Image 1 (cartoon, rainbow, N blue to C red):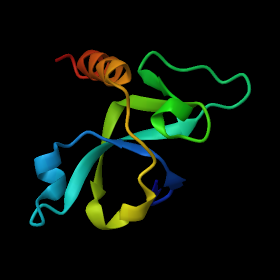
Image 2 (cartoon, rainbow, N blue to C red; image 1 turned 90 degrees about the vertical axis):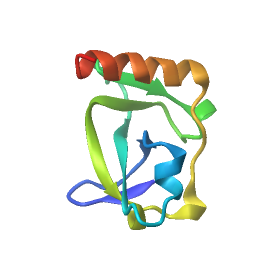
Image 3 (cartoon, one colour; image 1 turned 90 degrees about the horizontal axis):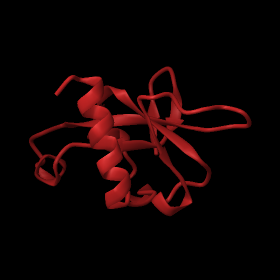
Image 4 (cartoon, helix red, strand yellow; image 1 turned 30 degrees about the vertical axis):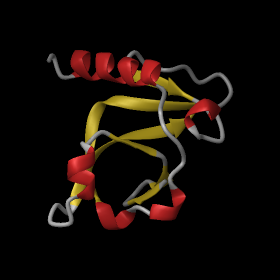
Amino acid sequence: MVDLPNLGPHPVVVISSQRVIDEPTIKSVNGLLCSSIRGSDRLGTDEAYLNFADGLSCPTGCQCHAMLLIQKQRFNPLQRLGSISLERRDDIKRKLRAAFSL
């Protein structure tokens, strides 16, 4: 969970490598904004589905069309929510490739 300016607290999927995350001279990481899915909300074609199995408290859409540059200091190291399954990581990769024409 990260407290984002103008958005408030939201879960994010960090997509930077572990080397970047661990390197103290690098002050920010790349992440994907996630938002809860409520009621009749439907995922967009650029969103990946995440849920309890990924450590989240409710069904969530991970927006794969835009990366956020997030300052590491905004993260609470004691508040890691979970780990995304390999199947869902592959879905996120597919959606990133499509969104960025990679």
